[in-house]
Length: 199
Ligand SMILES: C[S@@+](CC[C@H](N)C(=O)[O-])C[C@H]1O[C@@H](n2cnc3c(N)ncnc32)[C@H](O)[C@@H]1O
Image (cartoon, rainbow, N blue to C red; front, side):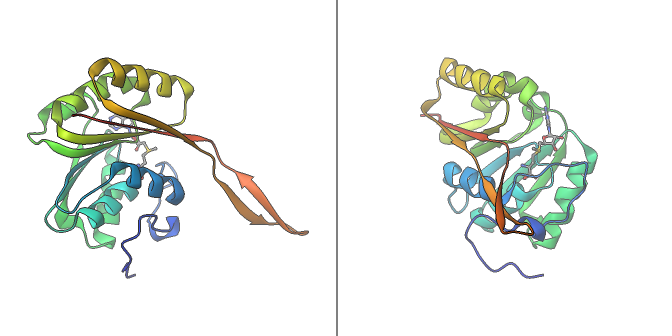
């Protein structure tokens, strides 16, 4: 398999999957990556790397001068992300760490330009607070959330901590599905994409 495009939103079926491990779907991934505003050479942290689709796409965007750290509390997710990184030829650009956020974040001796939070909703306040400590000035944090409680907790934590330019976008994706009589649009869960900057 060869992936030669640089536009975010690699088709979902290009990734190796495991039914127990979630993945950020391609349309949501494309939007989340655009909100991250990744530059060549950036240091990126992906908290809750899951299947590795965000880690892989981010590493294609930062190029060989950047690096992506993927963290997940599940060994299976780390292994799946590694296999997907190998598949896309970006393993050299990626550092994978098994551990639970926020605690594991304090063991990483790096500062980041961009942080994506795709997991850890039950500890979102603590993860945002830890992210503030390890993000560079001018850096951006982007959060994908499904639950209203996560959105509420994330927004209030970001405001209290001092993140600026907060933005929240609700995205509802409907995909066409062939039926006997025509094409029906099947709606997926609404997803909230929250972003903010450390200035
Ligand atoms: C929705 S999935 C992320 C999908 C991923 N963005 C992708 O593109 O494949 C959420 C992931 O976060 C991980 N997770 C949840 N809470 C976590 C925590 N506190 N620390 C680290 N990982 C966590 C889960 O194990 C799961 O793999």
